[in-house]
Image 1 (cartoon, one colour):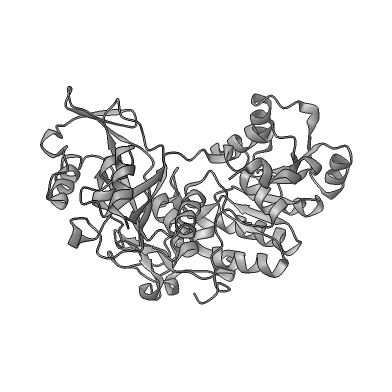
Image 2 (image 1 turned 90 degrees about the vertical axis):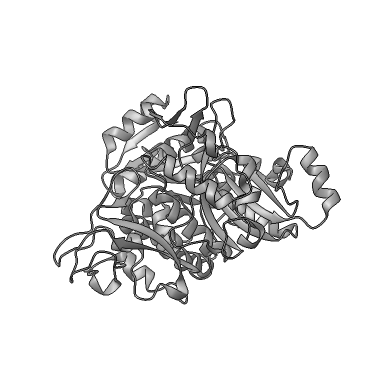
Length: 455
């Protein structure tokens, strides 16, 4: 694809963008890239922490005179008339800014759904980086965008959009997608000389020599690796959310309710994510799943990237590709195609160009929910308690996530609809938190979820 040709109209117009949540890693990396792109104008920024945002802008080299703190609509009009960035704490003030697209990156679903609805209803495109919101109401927001004749999309640079892109690329080329997925956030780095594994900044003494080679009994090897590294976390809440977004947009279903999370090396993926009858771990095909990247210190990382496993339809072609270094399974029947990166906001301008200049999403275009991320209670909850969400990974204290087919989700509440809600009834340990147990009075996210097509 020649992207300069695709977006050749970029030089003749300027895209006016508002970014909500500029202080986070995603928001900062997007600002970094927007500064070098003359086709994008940062028209407005929105964050509750105005002083923190000003400090972040200064650290990025923005001139203080380029930004105006706005407390009301009149301030916004004055700032924009002077071609200054309108910095607001109240997202409702964005309605007074002439915009082409809003990038929503707050991470707070109850707020982000309101921001998205406001923008779409007034004919402004939306790039939804708050995947928690998209996992609950992505189909509704996409439907609202279609009705408003604008685009709703997940942004490139985040794993859901990148994986949706890879899956749809594979399908357009005629590949039979057996599985699609991503690596979890952090690598497990094994030093065979020291018999230790580094995870984040911690080192653990452990030997993986006996299970380093995948061998013929793949399930046994994976179980041995998991047991050897049982002291480390082997799943992460955001993975379920991200694959919920991908499932809704592609129709691929969860490989397992808890997802499989094999500790796997990159060259093993085409042997692992294949049907059980062919030696792999899949109970069915056409699924989404996650792996934990296992590597040596001198191996390249998967970089939080994404992959598809496809069927090989011609032995000679795929043996040729295997000789060129592509990942083809031992049987020769499956191959793994992967993108070993996601660059956060550095990639996101591609989604802005596509939405504004072409009227096309680069990511989510969900028509209806195919899967639902739910919360399973890990202890007994009592009426009156709040399902508190917190931490870097937006977990719910005392609950673990599952990703289930919508057809069997029943009355279970979407995970991020349950977050920060008060319980109207007891929830027993092991039970999926039911929608009926939540105090949803005044919840904008619940109102939007009810508008999901065929939920």
